[in-house]
Structure formats: C-alpha cells, structure tokens
Length: 390
Ligand SMILES: Nc1nc2c(ncn2[C@@H]2O[C@H](COP(=O)(O)OP(=O)(O)OP(=O)(O)O)[C@@H](O)[C@H]2O)c(=O)[nH]1
Image 1 (cartoon, rainbow, N blue to C red):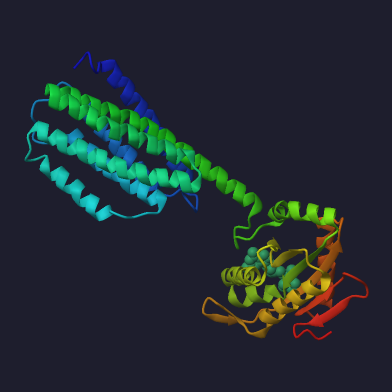
Image 2: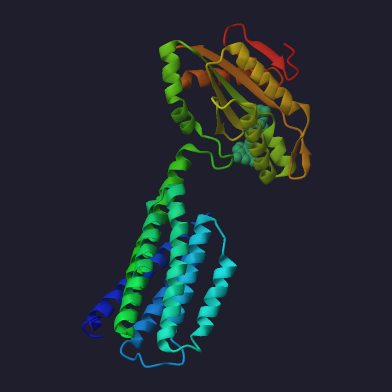
C-alpha cells in the first residue's frame, strides 16, 4: 500500500482538494447575492463538500481495510457521484433519469450493509462510474450548446473516472488485489475532482464573461439591443447602404405620458408595459430590421433598404395597433399610445445623424398632440395621427 500510494501523496491530494473546495466556496460566497447565480451552483457545492468528506474518510481509513460494518468512503463516493449527475443535469437544464438513478444510488448505499468488501467495491465503483458517465454526457452537451470549454473540462473529468473503472476491475479480477483496485478508484476520484473544480470555475467565469458581453449590447429589461448593440448590428448594413447609395429609414418611438402609467399602475407594471411594447415592436418589424431600446420609454427601429414612404406606413401601423385597444398587462387594461418620428437617408449618412433626425421628428409628433407619426425626410414636416390622418 505504502509503495503504491505513499502517505505524502495522500497529504498532497487532500491539500489540493481542500484548496479547491475553499476556492469553490469563495466563488459561491461571491455569487450568492447575485440575482442570477450560475445554474447548478448549489448542487455543485454540495458535491464538492461531499467529495471532500469522502476523501478525508478514505485517507483516515488507509491501511485499515479490514471489513467494517459500513464502508464510509464507498458510500460517500456513490452519493457524491450521484450529486455530480444532479448538478450536471441542473446546469444543462435536463432532468431525465433523476429518480431512476436516485433509486440505484439508494439501493447501492443500502447494499453495502449486506455485501462482502469485494462485492461492495464492485457495486460502488460500477455505480459511480455510471453516474459519472451520465454527468459527463450532460456536461459535454452543455459544452457544445453553450460554447463553454469549462463544461468540456468537467466532461473530461468524467472520462477519467469512467476509464479508471475497467483498469481497477482488471486488477481486482486478475490479481485479486482489492487494495490496489480501491487505490486506483480513489486516485481517479481525486484527479477527476481536481479537473472538475477547475472545469466548474472555468465554466462559471466564461458564463460571466458571456453575460457581461451581452450586457454591453443588450437591454436587460426587454432583451432588445441597446444603443451600442444597435450600432454593432448595423455596421455592415450601413456600410453597404453607403456603398450602394441605398435608403435607410429610422424610427424613434416614445411612449406617451409614460409617467402617468407608472404613477397609476406602479413601476413594476410600468416595466411590464415597456416589455409588452418591445414585444409588439419586434413582432411588427421584419427580420432585417433592428429594434433597440435607447432610453427609458424610447425605442429605435432601423429599417435598412427602406424608403421614407414605406417606413411611414410601418410607423402608422405601429401607432394604430398600439392606440387601437388597451394593452393587457398584469391582468389590467392599460391604454398606451406612442409618438413616432421617422427619418430617412440615402447613401452616406451616419447612424447618429439619422437617429437625431428621427428624434427631432418624434418631438414634432409630441408637439403635434402625441399618438401620431411625424417625418422629416423632406420638408415640410408631415404629421398624421394614429388613424393616419394628416
Ligand atoms: N417603469 C419604468 N419607468 C421608466 C423606465 N425608464 C424611465 N421610466 C419613466 O418614464 C417616465 C418618462 O417621463 P417623461 O420623460 O416625463 O415622459 P412621459 O411621461 O412619457 O411624457 P411624454 O414623453 O412627454 O409623452 C419617467 O417617469 C421615468 O421614471 C423604466 O425602465 N421602467
């Protein structure tokens, strides 16, 4: 035993696991008051704690392999492999097989009371390998679908654990060396734990980086683009419009008297009204159009390859649809109207200039009585109300 797994190795492994568990706890602490914690955070933490306890139990038991009433490391190994499967399932948002595998885990735990050490070892390492394989598949799926290499590392950890099972079984059945087989299994547990902790931390960091880069271009309330996102989305089509001397139209859409909505129905319902208007704008625009929220109750709609009269028709349709009947928000009927400014440019115009023109037209629509469309594509200014009357 000593040659295979010397004591200083055990101390090194235990120290490593201890540090990684502390790092994991630090991450949990930092993220705990975040309103949107990473998926599977709680279950992964329980897994790391259970693995630490299992490994401490194994270290304490070294050299005392004589039959015991309860093989604590074996039970811990089974339970924490199942926890890993649950955590991976929560992270991948797939909850298949939880009850069946939970039943297997329970049966495996209970069986250790009745089996001899060799049979007990076969049961727990086979079951743990199976749970690791299931967890690895879920993480591989998530790594692929979310482009997150951290989940790929977790899947790699599962491969390491699964690969150790036939190697350990080979030792057990050819040389009947239970001690060596157990050491192989727990060695694989340790190194897969190290990989798992690194993978989990990497995965969470990548997720936050993705979240932050989304925040830079996305409005968190509506999921629409923000002004910067809109500029990014339009860079190519504006360059093409400049090159081909094509027309681009812009609409500034502002909800009328929105302060009254907040005052009468509350800020939260006000937020839901903004979401609902955003959804309507998205529904009413084409796939090539870009919709963005550019202020509290202000939206910008950019229509590439669209001339002023076509844009004006779209604007009047939006104005009419919203003004026609009250919105149903939070089980209440809330009358909402919008004022829309339309601007159009041909060829070489900057997005900023186009938006300023649309903004100017929107103020004209407000001054003209609200619930109407104004355009500044050519002077004089055209005004029409939601019924389209000039
Ligand atoms: N609920 C909610 N309200 C917001 C948000 N952003 C801005 N507001 C509110 O929107 C209101 C805008 O008020 P004003 O700029 O005076 O305009 P208005 O009441 O819509 O009137 P007009 O634009 O002149 O028709 C303010 O009361 C802001 O508090 C938001 O994200 N959620």
